[in-house]
Length: 553
Image (cartoon, rainbow, N blue to C red; front, side):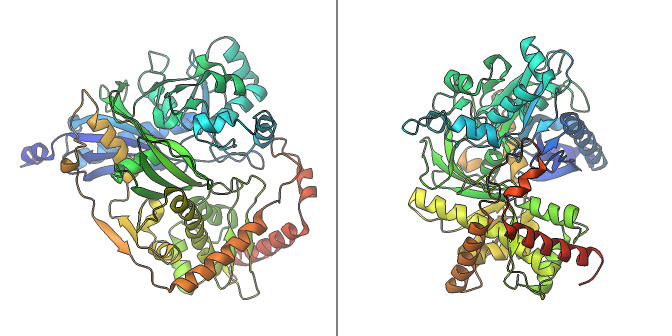
């Protein structure tokens, strides 16, 4: 019986899903897209100074090995033979920047995370060198000049970390986003590891020409980054190398996609005009624009969606990026202590069913799409003596939904055809209060996949479909249909618009807090530039937080 069970499973495909908050390894049946087993490890974030966000590259790598080993153990307990795993895909947090020594294999500094804003003064300085009549950075990359992307993070490392400077001079330095660091390490590291990335991750560096699909000499010279430290760019679906250690030694790594592109593939948004929204640490709405680069007039990014094979065409997407979504829940847990687990947020919000006029703008790293306003900072407003932690919890969930509404509105204006529904995925979609709020605030149905791991699924699909692997068909007639749950709007359109317009007022209040001092210096005199309102709001939040931490309702 056990042998027949193994035979019935058919080829399996694994996926590393390395996100900002956690690392996971998941194994899927390539014939049914069924998730068979997985393991997850939370990843620490370090905040050494105001606005700085870092992670340990070695901790990330070790977490990948741990997740692979634990998942393989679980498969063994299910009587599933791990030799059926025929390929591995990698999905990763994008933009996060690692520079390491190719001789020793050691990182030369912590990973500088995509959320990090230490490079704001660098951005402002570089911006002055871009002609208004010829924004060659945006026309070549599809991206605004921002702290978000890798190029300015590399520039900061070159300017401020002597170990990086010396390694570059001695031709020992390699740069990569998290996918490159992992693939190089997993395929042997100092013993022949391959230094590669894919087109989706390369397109988030601000060094990659999304038209020619090559590193751009003019961009590298503009940012002062030597091209020899950059990885080779390949498609999202081909064999990059073989696992050189662990339970899956010898298995090819044959899929690589930035996490949001992976989710687009996992949601099977292969047609022009199909869109998905992923709720993770941040919130990311992508709309497939086919083989055409569509440039936004409303604050969205133009990015590479995927290229599923060396000889396959490249597809593009419009993207709306929100910096803080699930991260606001983690902040309520770790910084204010008003919840002990992330799951408690739904229970708290359900107890009141309203924010009671409280609005939360979680602009911890400034505002991303559609504003691209680095001077913004987080505020909680509309507080009264009646406000309690339940209202703040509800307002935090509403904030995620309002931010999604803003980027959906921008997407509709750019595309010209409003979305009739929104496909969603990501860890936060398990929160039913959030999903219903989203439908109410968008005033269109929200359609949630009952298999929320669509990011990992997309990476697995790319890996299984690669030439030389060929265990996963991406032909439309062969794709498995994902089961879904649908949330319909339950409030009237007028109420939805009133709540949204009040949110927009709160967003305006969040802007202009940081006006003179760059966070690069970590200088506390930054507070001298902040308006009095900042201190009033902060004091109220601290007072309320203290009440909740002490158990006062």
